[in-house]
Length: 368
Image (cartoon, rainbow, N blue to C red; front, side, top):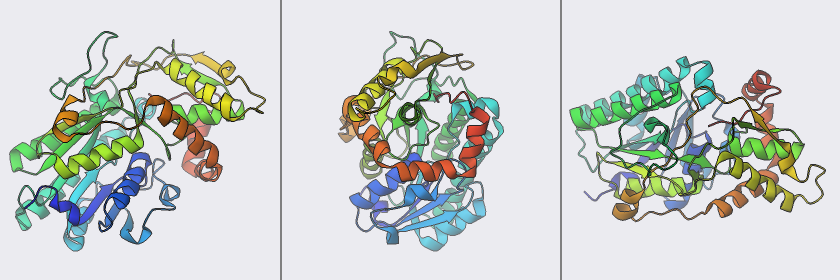
């Protein structure tokens, strides 16, 4: 059977009402006019029906509001819908939240991943006896599992040792290990990707880039942790989706692939670039120049200084490279948020967002 043939069947996307998941569903529907996606999402604070408005083909999308920890429900979906591929986005992903309360991160990121793996093992391997090219479990992870790099350290390859420094990063590291263990022990056909910081449309306003855009437009302070010299690699979400699709099509079972954008400004440099774009596109704003709103605040506990991933493997083996530069991706992102006030207002009306706003009122500190 040809590699990637499972894509011609039904697909389960977990966390598909979230930021990256909803962008991936849009990408997949455009890439394959026949694929049908079953979207399993608990619709907690990170997932929203608003993210799924205007899909390319709503008839090929089925939203199931359920918890990934419900293994029986997942098994039922795999059997009844004939699902042959799982793309696992669902996760608690906000570092600050993991510091304030780690328990949901352990439950969703570790126990939830275990439940999905068990369901896939039982239905695909024990019951149906599918081979390695007939099904695929793809696990989406993060660069934070590797811990912090020094300013002169080279980007990390897929063989780098794990050294997570936050409860969020530790929970994702544990889920990565579970996925690899199921591949080695049971022969479950899996691929894993570790990605850098995503940005783009449909990202919650609690995250750094949309937070800065929203605060700057409203004339609110733009808080930067510590000295603002932390470095992240920034990956436009559309490029992330294209990389995931390439891995599903051509990636070899059992392998790990790094996905990154190759853009590594400091947090302060990034915020100033956003301010400059807003200055250009909002010439009548009373808050120009927007960079005057930047305020340094107390640093996060245990804040990692730098992340960077080596993407030579996915470039050489699968021929993937990002399409967006930092400038082009930021421009697209700023314009999307300026053009989608209705989406922002709908998100801000949600009780979960109001609870977050109440908890952080007066701080509005950026994530990561």
